[in-house]
Image (cartoon, rainbow, N blue to C red):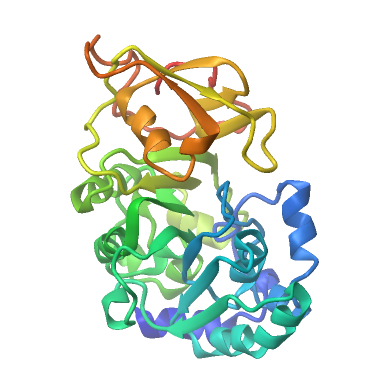
Length: 348
């Protein structure tokens, strides 16, 4: 499978226009500050990027970031501008052609930014232990529609957990399905290369994440994928696919479900580019200055991560009030793009 993916992304594809579906593309909408950062990225790097969105969590200044499946280096060079000279970005990819593009423009971006803080390493994202990366050394790990291409997704998540600092997070976009993919479709090289047949069934993903230590996966945003290719639609039309962004925090002993201790937080409005509200996940969009009730896990995610200085924390662990209503195990994604997530409060 590695060889098939290397062939597809190294030789078959010349740019995102060569993709046969939109599955590998994240949402085209992005805020102005991300578009401004993209202007500084070399044209060849942009041209050899296979997608359209950009994975960029909040509050990155000074962070050490690892990009899994960094490709031509586009996201690395964008995030380099947000971490600044005191931070750093490491990209990992297995495709020589993509790494050649990324490495060819290291000096260009260092000159443009006024500092050089990006490096690229060749390797497999499920074998990060072979790349001499220090354990507990990254603040943030990102990935943009690549983990579905790995033949051992549990190993990817396990290695990410090992490399993150306590309180660090894995923030990534990928493709998920509403059921398990039949093996004959997994074995189809085009379907696999198009980010479809390697997609995890959403509940299998959540179970894998919990198994390796990410106890409470948080869905940030999602959208249904339209394949827009009649031939491929015939093969996989009975399966629902979704593009989704998750954040996974490395915080020990988070509870399996969202428990209510009567706690709340107040967002100070101080995260850069987020003066009005802070989006933790799909069910937690916190207006600045407002007392916002949270479960114990959410309280800890904010209190034990890089976001702590941006919040006031209310309450203790002295009394337990039960589970937050609505914490269930049904499909978490919206099938209809017109549906809007309820962000008025509560947990999930």
